Image 1 (tube, rainbow, N blue to C red):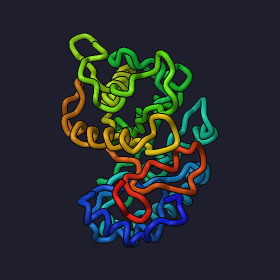
Image 2: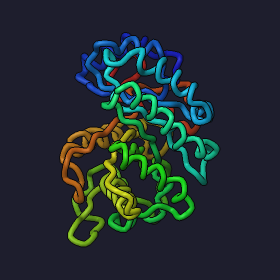
Image 3: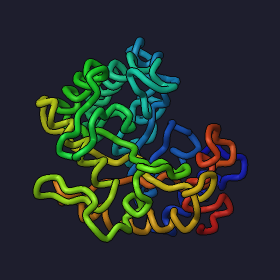
Image 4: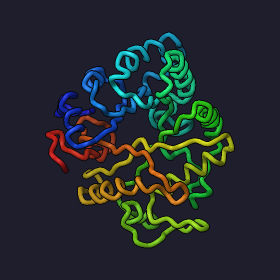
Amino acid sequence: MLGNNLPSAREVVDFYKANNVKRMRLHDPNQEALEALRDSGIDLMLGVPNTDLHRLATSADDARQWVENSVSKFYPSVNIKYIAVGNEVNAVDGANRQYAPHVLPTIQNVYRVIRARGLHEIKVSTSIDMTSIRNSYPPSQGSFRDDVRSYFDPIIGYLVLAKAPLFANLYFAYSRSRPGDIPLNYASFTEPSMLVQDGSRGYRNLFDAMLESLHAALDGTSIGPVKVVVSESGWPSAGAEHATEDNARTYLQNLIPHVNRGTPMRPEPVETYLFAMFDENKKVGQETERHFGLFYPNKQNK
């Protein structure tokens, strides 16, 4: 939604329906978007922005007000399926680490309000990236970094108790290739041979290997079973050597049928959200960040 040339919320919802897109992720509770989603039949993953975490973590009243204004006001005419508390908050590294102490308290405060209001169908979790994985090769040996365990283990304990999935954003590095980098074919689902052999399981693509390493890391904590929902995956069409429309098309057209088959370790459909619907010309960061759209802002298909 970070653009000055995007369609209105009502147009976007109509566009989703016209293209048979039945699930949506919003990174914040934009009221215009939530109003437009009423009676649309679209399942929603609704985000609590990182900048709201401190307030909702330290005030149960603020958490109640957030649920009232963002969830109760719209549910069930808006089919809110998930609440994603924070996005890519890392306990040790990265620009978002200052939010780490507030993720679990916000999850707990929001979850208590959801439970008290009888909204048991809504699952509350958080969305991570892969920087907290210490070892990802081979996938069955995936494990969390030691310095993030004190942050992640209590979150995993909550997810087991609440029977909620963990959300994970899975991406490939799109910048210029260097010797030893991951082959482009392996990243884009076009590698014909098994590049990684892990016991009896073989891997032809990076997506499966990353997801399986996260499964292994979760299992390795011995806290309990946790499902993973891929809350973002995509490929930019400009801004770096491998960020081209052809590569984006190849990745997305292969990803969509692939996730219906699942992974070698878990051969069942993987709920996966494509990032993103539109290019965002006001998004800050690397140039690739502005070119992840499946569609141009004028709704033309890339």
